[in-house]
Image 1 (spheres, rainbow, N blue to C red):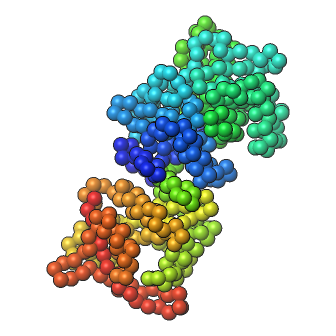
Image 2 (cartoon, rainbow, N blue to C red):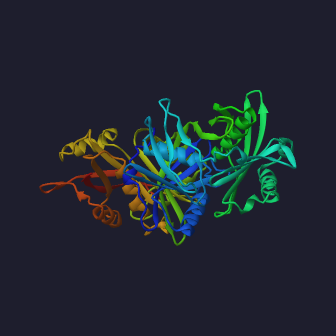
Image 3 (tube, rainbow, N blue to C red):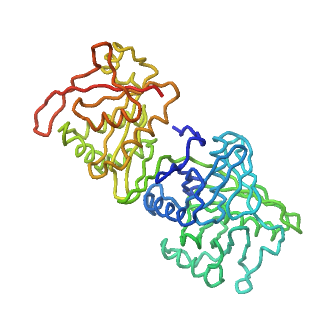
Length: 475
């Protein structure tokens, strides 16, 4: 299931930032909606996102960019001010909503707007900012088999000696790369990379190490667009001819194709092209206790990690184990409900760097037969109604707008004209205040309230009943 893309609705304000995480060729990239002009604020957001999607996690974020989808214009600014080809491809994919087409993007670190778009095969491409002068590709006099490639926004060093990194772990490879960057004085550039390149029977494989000065980040990247371009420019200059869609194998195992228009005397154009995948989207919330991310759960794999490690069951029983519910739930009950939310409905999780702190879920009302039967009696349209099935935030993280954002995120995913129905305990005044604040009204019919008796096991070990009431809103 792919997110419904509505760029004009995605904007940052105050201490909340909407984002979409992308995977262009394996180079996981977080794009914040809205340009943040302050470089120090961009770096802070960059660090917060990376702390929430750290190295070694399933969706490790390697770089953060900021995008503005203006009418007839798209602007991209990376956290460190550098140029990034894969982020440019990702921004084009979002601007075009994944549909074939072509636009121009004003990217940070580059003077002129760049051509970018989506092919009829669904691959996203971007023009790469290169200099026309072939002398911008220089032989390293101390290692003649290697090359310096000077590009707008970044300088790459193409190193064909991969024996020096063979058998090394990530930190060792990064250190070797950084030593090469420093040795050649490239650490003063806005961004610099070392592309360890190797020819194999399947094609050229690269291992990219990239350093960004302003954000002081050093990554062993899973894919690198500028590094792929640098290798392509070396190939073109050495052959004296253009190259077209030369596949360069990335560490992720995916391929990025590079095209270089070279007539023997000048480089006329460069482009990278490949698949782009949307991973998830959500909101970053900055709090006094650290950053929180609220993200949509699209796949069973995403949900599975929270079920398997016990985080979801623990949080669920902690949240509903206190007043006014005092309920207790089994693993089977929680797993069944949340698998339904993920498969048939809308599911968001809130977490900090230490783990899950909240959740919000909705399903079509038609999936809840008992509640749907009650709703019919109050004139609620079953087929066009979404039921807000679950909402919870750990007590220590309440009063930080998390519950409100969890509600708003779900509502944003519904089509215009949808009726939204929610249920809460008649004694849960905090929940009622929140939903009333967001425009919900209690469901009544003359002198009747829409209500339901719910039987659930309590923390005492006994099964008891309590009364729930309903609120609705049309979006």
